[in-house]
Amino acid sequence: MEFVIDDKLNGLQLIKNQNIKGIHLVSPPLASIQIFHYLNSRHAYLIPALEKALRHLHASGRTEKIKNAIIKQHIKVL
Image (cartoon, rainbow, N blue to C red):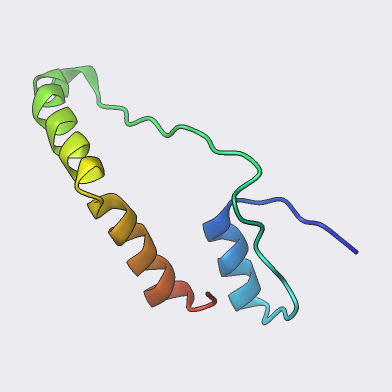
């Protein structure tokens, strides 16, 4: 048995591009990481509105729906 560790989107894209068979995703993930958004300091005034919008998207479940739609539409492996 062989193992490869990669993030989900890169792994699925690799499976699709190389037409690899017999690969299974591990669920739940072995690890999760936080993602940070960065703005140039000249755009600091946008931070409150951006933070509010991102929190709303996350709380509403919209970010998860967008992520799943991208996976299904562009990768089509699941």
